[in-house]
Amino acid sequence: MRGLAHRLSRLWIPAVCLFSGGCLTLHHVPPRPGQTTFSAPVVTLQAQLVDSFLILEVKWDKYGPYHFLVDTGASVTQVTPELARRYAIKDATPMDMPEVPVRSADGRVTSLPPTLLSRIELGGARFDDVPAVIWDCAPVSAQLGIKIDGVLGFPFFRETLLTLDYPRERVVLQPAASAPPAPGTVIPFNNADKTPFIPVRLGDQTLIALIDSGGDEVFSINPVGLDLAFAFGPTPGPTVSTITGDIPSRIGRLAGTVFIGDFAVPHPIVQVSDEQFAIGGGALKYFSVTFDQEHDRVTFQREADDPIAIPARRSTGLSFSKSPAYWRVVGVVPGSPGQVAGIEPGDLVTAVNGEPVAQWNARRYDQLMANAEEIDFTFLNGTSKADKRLKVFELVP
Figure 1 (cartoon, one colour):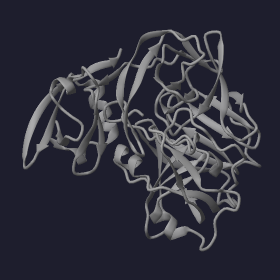
Figure 2 (cartoon, one colour):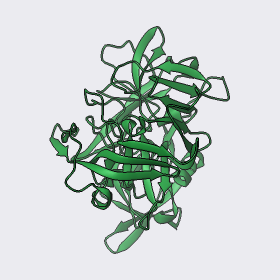
Figure 3 (cartoon, one colour):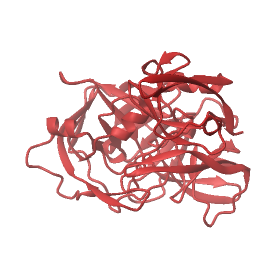
Figure 4 (cartoon, helix red, strand yellow):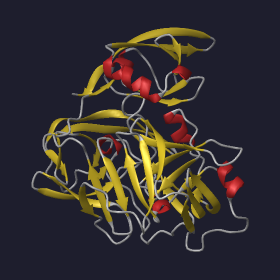
């Protein structure tokens, strides 16, 4: 996912679909929230665009605020053990929701325990009897630098007309039964499981893509069986964090044009994957996207009709896991300025351009990476500190 090194680690949970551009969903219609009620015909929630993720900050009790990531590629909602302890209905679990298998990149499988929450409130929208699985969300929090309390999966919004308005950094919720159709280019879902798979075009090929707001790549694509031509790469990319370890990724720029409806994305940067094709937040952020599960359709709206130009991917070659005190290096791109400088996974960064890392949120760091020619990093070596200046290069031109 796009992050501190412009493509930071991403959690790969195929069964849950979190941060996976192409994941294995549950093969049944996921359970509905028990009840969704609105205090107004339209509920508008300001969101924070972190990397290419929409993060909601909400408060409905004395323990908040809570931070939730909206993930249309997730087949279930995930919440932290802390939130589950606070709101789980005692001695109750969703009757048709077994433990969810989680497979990491090394093939190991574990399971996430299910729970049933009494409620989650998003401003004037209240969701009662919410089925979820329990997961600590620590990898997401570490990458985004924000404590994430939950990841709201696609079925969570089954009773709503859900609009992810990326340009205005907001999420709009309306009752599905009474909401008028959203203006824009309408594309039907391509399956009967209430999962947002839609057809997209690449040259003369039609591909089925998952709309995955929980992944911040532009597109994630599996080259097997496809006639793909690359203008650049694929090349080694940032490190991908999984539940059980870190693995390198591969990224490149396609030679062709991807069409989402009539919207053209020429020569996009893609992450090469062994999973299904997915549209991530790196592409969605150019749109206001409305999901209508009642009528199995999604609407893309964009003020401009011109082709979407995906800029070069710039990097120092470092991938990080973040905490307020330090950033831990989790990967170094081969041949990058970071590797030339002798930086290794496990090294700790305490400051960027002389400022403590706590002062560098994801947006500010991305702006620095987009414009700087060099970046100074302060590394912690035992009890001493050392400064290293790294060049910023075009990982994918």
